[in-house]
Amino acid sequence: MFYSKTTKKKEFILEKYQEKVAYYLNEFQKYEKKYGNGIPYSITINKGKHSGHIIFSSLVHGNEVGSLPGILKCIDDIISNKIKFFGKVSFFLGNIEACLKNLRFVESDLNRSFGENYKGALSKERKRALEIMPLLKQADVYFDFHQTIMPCLKPFYIFEMNKQSYYWARAAGVANTLVTRKKGVSFSSAGMCTDEFVRSLHKAGITIELGEKGFHKESEIMSYEIMKRSLKCLDKVFLNHSSIIKLSRKNIDFEFLNIVYREPFHHAKMQLNEGIINFKSITTETKLGVNQFGKDIFSKYSGYILFPKYPKRTENGEAIPPLPGEIFVVADKTKEHPLVWKE
Ligand SMILES: [Zn+2]
Image 1 (cartoon, rainbow, N blue to C red):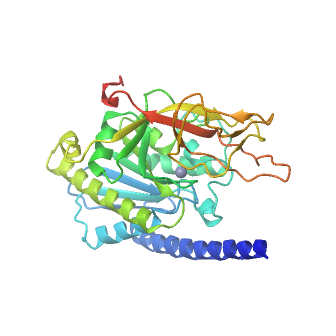
Image 2 (cartoon, helix red, strand yellow):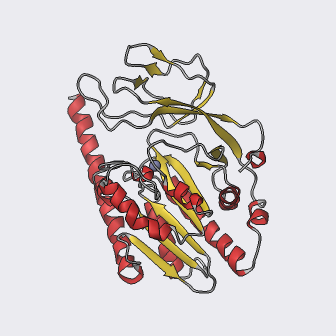
């Protein structure tokens, strides 16, 4: 009885999810008819008063749909001039097939498929990355909206330390935490993220995690606010020649966390304990899960857990491949302001 009830509930949720997704994708495609830029599920609105170009994206991970309503609202408000904007803005939706299936990705992680030196297979996602890369090459500023797999105690920006990206993120505000790392330490060994690709072109590339995945009012409001504020900043920088450094200082500075440890997901039998959520505080003594030999997994450093992974498993408990790069990451407060780090 219990199981059939939860299964029904799951089916109901999925039905609702798919209804909502279909609605928003359809709305986006209506705009595409007039503002399409040649890339499927992407539009460009050019107000033509300055050369600044800002790009926003959603669904780079297919089931992280939280910013989708915010993006639609933002497009609507730009077109109706409710948001006054004078430059060029593009939007793209990353992984549509995965989104429709309520999956993070179909063949490989789109957010590890960017860059000119990509070494992986020519997956559906790599093909999509190749479609999107010419657009991203035109960005002056780029915001990529994500959500975490597990519940999350607060929204956070996350990107490798880069002054420009830091100033733009702080100017946009909304989240007060920046999870960062020193330049040169690639986020994932698999391939380039979208924002990483933009930074490699010496432009501001920013990822924000809005909270737990799914349609939530908070995600909609946060993504909309970030877009509205950064559109305004783009006008100020490109039209009035304001300094993004000065604009950023109108907002309080971030709390900075640095990634201090990653536990590689190197065996399908590795498994985290239930209920580990983002920003859970841990020490080196906290039992986090078990490895393939049934021994406890500990972090080598104290701090806060990020990106705990709970992949689907077979009957004998093995995670179904492809395995994520890390089973969890640990971040801790930085001792110094990351601006003192060498770039
Ligand atoms: Zn994501």
